[in-house]
Length: 606
Picture (tube, rainbow, N blue to C red):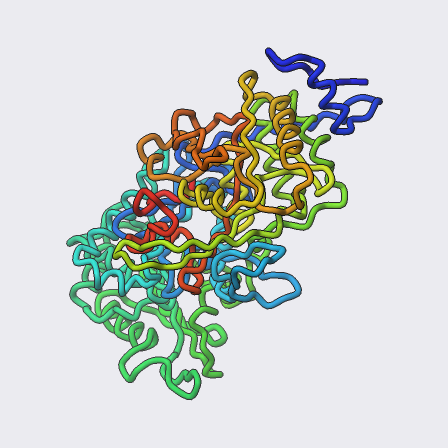
């Protein structure tokens, strides 16, 4: 019989016995995994789950969340085009980026604590299928291969840029700082910036204009996608935009709106007698027409006014059927693509980016050809660490996950918020640590934090905090005494050996019961701001409830050993019965004590 190669300082007989217990056939080990050598991501970014994109997410400024997505092959020697997109009122970053809808059912708001077979993203509903900003930018990259196209989606706390600006006296200056901060994250030559927004996101663009006397030279475009409600000051905004446009031939202004004057919803008009983007666009046309000759054309139901050789474009849908076209202008009509590329041939629809829409977040069905956990992990032994990580990520992301990990466990905690008021929060976690394989043949797989984050994103989940780990241990029904190893901690053989020990420790317990105390958790923490390139680990509790591993950021984020475990928690939690995104709860100064013992968490992802 072929056996596992012995690990350093561990007897070969142990691995021979282990190989036999895992069912490796007498004819020798399974075939080797084809090596995959993933390119290293840009510093500060991790490899996302879709289209190979590189991702970075942070809370910056007071109450501003930013997610940046770079192309898979970001080349710092090429020019970079940074699209900063401000979310509309009521939509999260994830909804603005967009995804496919659930097959066979209408997307519905998650209901906890009832167990479900698939985790859903926070607030999964129609909002995921209206803007598709990520897919439109991916389509743009397809036709502009000579440059890097980076996308940054910015979200205001409370999901309203107008409200955020009203409650932040320095909001305009903060908007400018947000853009400058994100621009500074990108390597290579300084990025050219294009600012876009939909609905209330227009307030972000006007805030940028209000921040200083002039528009910076590195801004190439403003795109108001049915978002110019706030335009009322011809001197303050109009003069500034005209001066900026005249200052360079690369500068563009795009406004897309529709005739919303007579649109009704539930029998009531959606805009007042002076409101709406149709009237705001008319005010802009009057102001810009005074200085710039504008030519009028009409194609179908869209009237277009152009100036400066097409660098100024006002598209107004005449809306003859009196429909609500507010969101349709962005997604259905390819509005963002038109705003970023003059004369996009598919402007007006149908969608020209369908191939680039990412799947709905969730665990895919397990493929029929998926290998068992033992055979798969055994095949990893000869791979370098980076290739091993990529192989695990690909296998897990294609759904080779045991069924019992698909049913999440609710954990309910009563705790005081910052004001001292007792509140109830319910969150859901996987019953055990991340594993590959089937219910009958699975192995828990330690991975680096960046791989863990990639998987969490794809499955609509988050990594836990230290407090969440403690609460999970208290709620667990299976809590064996930890079984540490002391030698060859980073080898695949030790991964297999420790998993075999754990299976012995939990033998006879119901499959799917909430297990804790068998691994250290990879966690999120503010301490990663001290050393961003580290992994944070915590836990491995003993029966008295004390963790063997205090919160630590000693190791670099490329380090992983047999003791590390990835427990996923769903992005949606319930606070007093109401669904909230866990990243919003963690960042909220009042609510964060429910899930964090270190105050507001600014960095809820790697």
